[in-house]
Image 1: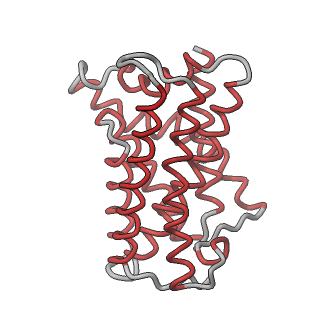
Image 2 (image 1 turned 90 degrees about the horizontal axis):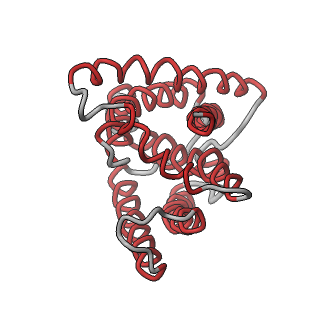
Length: 231
């Protein structure tokens, strides 16, 4: 599949501008919500800020597709699914249960205070704790559908795709995986997210599309959500 030849410099500038706008909108939503410091974030606000974060980034990707591609985001960035992508479900489950656990385990031994299971699970646990009734469906849509779609489109579709035309594809894969892990702004999650992003990057490189990446990412997030909901 032929993807638009987006210069990496343009991809970074558009991503950066979209990221800044997204965070400004999210901060504005938090400020007008009247939420007190330390108070749990309600799911409606999580949903609103998620949209505020995602819409500018997707709009930025679409802008680059219009400029350098056909203007069809599905074709330009390989948002294509096939039955073969179904194996992304066991891949995502295994990544969550086995891969991330294995990679994180040494850090829990070396830095037990910083990498305790409570701290690793804290962000997701906070969301689960405030999701009651129908709001659990909203949370599932955010975590299992929205986040995998936007993050794969952005990191594997736009950034990895454009950087791989500038340097070695494998080096590009590692750089974007590291960036993906760090941009989540949680030190305890970096080791696990980095290795998972390597898996996703290899899938993107092998298939030339994002379908398998998105299915794997969705299964990964769903597994984590179910585990926390059951404990």
